[in-house]
Length: 266
Image 1: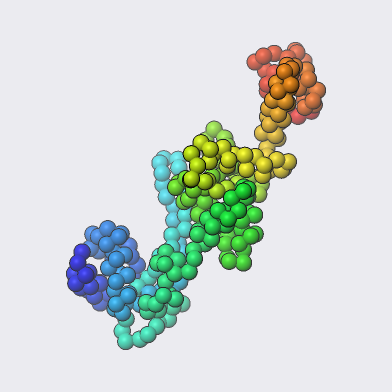
Image 2: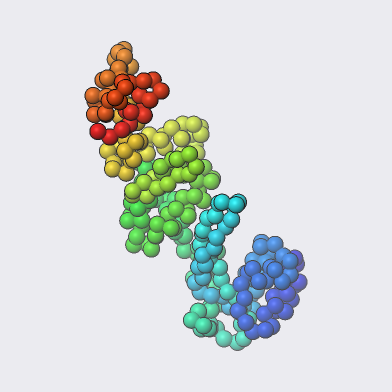
């Protein structure tokens, strides 16, 4: 869409004197989101429109299938035709003209929370961090737990961060202190980057009560078996039973039930 055409559509759309958002504009003219944003941004920059100083946050649900739904926060701005005033207060919202100071992070203004979180993990890439630890480290900058996980999922899709939690057969859930996050070094081969991330998250989890009892006992079994195999010895079921303090089944140890018995509490 050419600038003169875009300018005319903006003028026509805002003749009613009301505030409108990007979605309303693109639906009216059948534009793509990129075309609609470019037209409104240009109208704001050229002084035709005023825009809300702060983005409005709206909770939305996204459906991924019959039994899958996620929620996210959608930030958006409202625009209104500029009628000879430098700024405007309407319905509790402040509308301002274009300036560098009035740009939000997505428009190239102040450093976004997502970028702060990414920079923090990059600068402290020698360890893994629980999401609540990141919140505590950046709370003076207004970072909240939702900001951390929103940024983490976004950058994880770009293979820049690694996220670790409890893994079940269907999903991954947070530890007691939140998900574990760590930087992925893209200068290394992918397998080496993942191996490094796993080591750092293992260190962060070591000795933490955030592990489930089952996971903790499985890790102990693994460590015992690894230690004895390195010594050239064979570990017996009885030794594991005594070391872990597991109950002995009434009908004795059996191959098909012994593993489950090893995981029982005393």
